[in-house]
Image 1 (cartoon, rainbow, N blue to C red):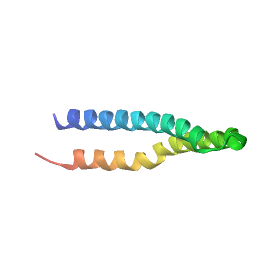
Image 2: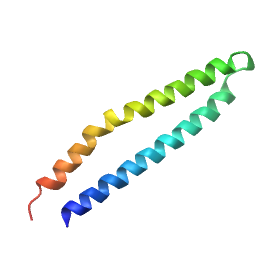
Image 3: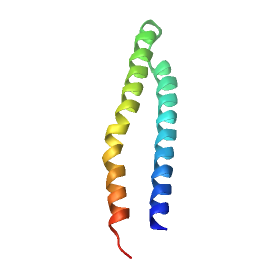
Length: 79
């Protein structure tokens, strides 16, 4: 029972993370187009979009150890 609960928790956390990444990308894209003046808007939006993509790619490397720690915590308990 505990193994199933840990699996579900991992999936739920992964889905929340993916949803947050998608939301953050949308916000950065819209916000970046508003804060830059017209003359440099293309460059500003391009840099912001690139930063958002790089951040979403590196999220799996940052979140990976957190998920493995969660698995160790779930599987190390004995009842």
